[in-house]
Image (cartoon, rainbow, N blue to C red; front, side, top):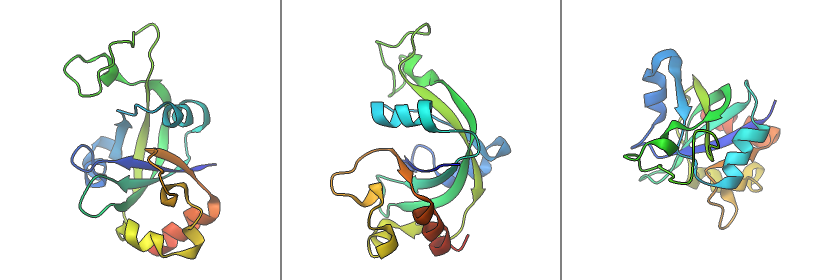
Length: 153
C-alpha cells in the first residue's frame, strides 16, 4: 500500500463534494502534469491512501482522507472541446491524460498548510519543499501517520 497527497481546488471538487457524491466516489480528472499523471498511471493502486488537499483557496490544507477506488482510465475531459482541460493532441486511440476514482474515507479536522509547516515529522514532505507544485505527490508511512494523528482520524 502506498500513500499520496492529491490536490484539488475546492471550487472545482471539494472534499464535501466527494462526501455527497454517489458512493462517496469521484473521478480524479484534470491532471495535466506528466509526473503526476505517471504516478496515477504507473504507481497508484486500488486501496492506496489519499490525503485530499484543498489548494488555491484562502486556507490551503488537508480536508479529508480518501482511498484510490479504481485503476487508471482515460480522462474524459481531454476530449471535451468545451472543457478547461481539453487537449487537442489527445485522441481516443491515444489518450494523453488519465483519471482514477477516489472514495472518501474520513473527514477529520481540517489541517492547514501553515500548521503542517511547523511539524518536524513533516519537514521532508514533498508538499512542503520549496518550489513544489505537483498536484499529486507520494507521502511516506510516517508522514501519513502524522497527518492522520493531527487530523484526529
